[in-house]
Image (cartoon, rainbow, N blue to C red):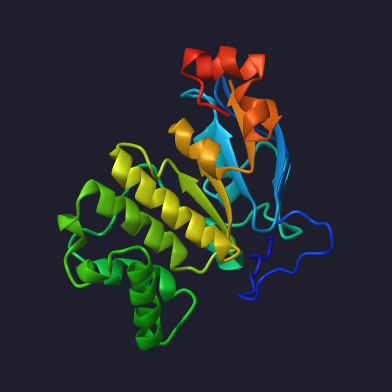
Length: 258
């Protein structure tokens, strides 16, 4: 019988020149559908990388493989040099990786601060300290005034920020953002952009899936493009926006200015 892997709460240490996240030859099939095929890319310490592509390209599957919600058929995911194979999502989170979900499911009857404390308690066993940390995150994201209200009463934009707060509550080194700007107004989108930039300035690396191309082009230092589960392009935003393969597969005539 295989012994369960134990995970230390102390963060992994990067070696010189080592990527924070390294994905190599990652593949996943669901029956006859090859959702992800031989996907490889990296995210450096403090870097912002965007994962884009048409609907069904394999982006969310890739997120699930990276964060432990799905097991790859082949390939490896390494975080700060540590192989994540066989680890459960909570174990991956304990190492310093957190993610948001496109479909938000806060606990509607719990207060906003209690929702975030579910994450902060993973880092701070003392409930008073966990609550203090949760309130600090909510203040940072502009939700401090709603901290003691039921989460079920929040607007869409506020639920998006709560989803972000719940991920930040675990104090990640790498934050995976799954369409945190979808469905928002231009003003609300700009607010999220400001928050993401502020989080990144603190040294948190970010890997994001996003269809709001204006946001992608202004945030990402590097873009990875998927189509039918395969990487078809990777590079700086200006280069990717003018890549004929990307234009044909995804951007079409709706190209954002580089």
